[in-house]
Image (cartoon, rainbow, N blue to C red; front, side, top):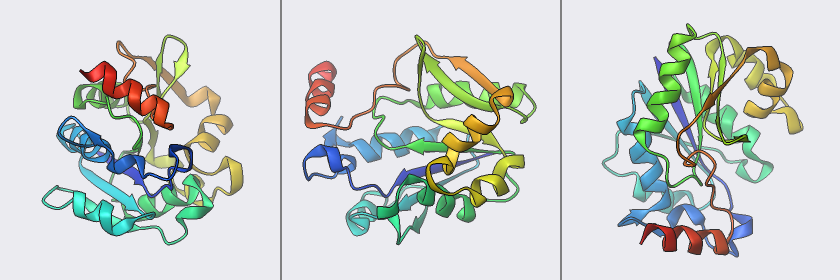
Length: 198
């Protein structure tokens, strides 16, 4: 059983003032596309952590099968948002899939491939997607690292610290598409995304 933690609390500082999660894409928004992919994948639950423009983000999640939680300290960085989501997630989960919200091309099939690899490794490996040598997201880490993630501080907080401290446990999964690496951080990348989607 996998719990998905969707990080939707950031300020989109490189987007020039707009919240990238609320930008239009494929008939809805970037956020809705990602959350729909997650909830359609083989996860047990989906936790969405909100922070910046929380009310607008919450409105987009109406009628979706997600649990919403608030990170009041979202400005302090992603590590704290991961912890808020992890505390809200089920302790019965075998693993936790931490999903960034700037990967609008992600599909349920991409996530199911990572979940399958995690299960095949009997829930003991940290699953990290790659595409043509480039590391992507989301990362799935086993429940045995839950307390370590919650205790992490500073630049080693969150999944990055776990991967760095336990390289022997990392299972690299080569993906067939670039969906796990096509993140949208700037207005230029967003325009390229729209042009490619036409």
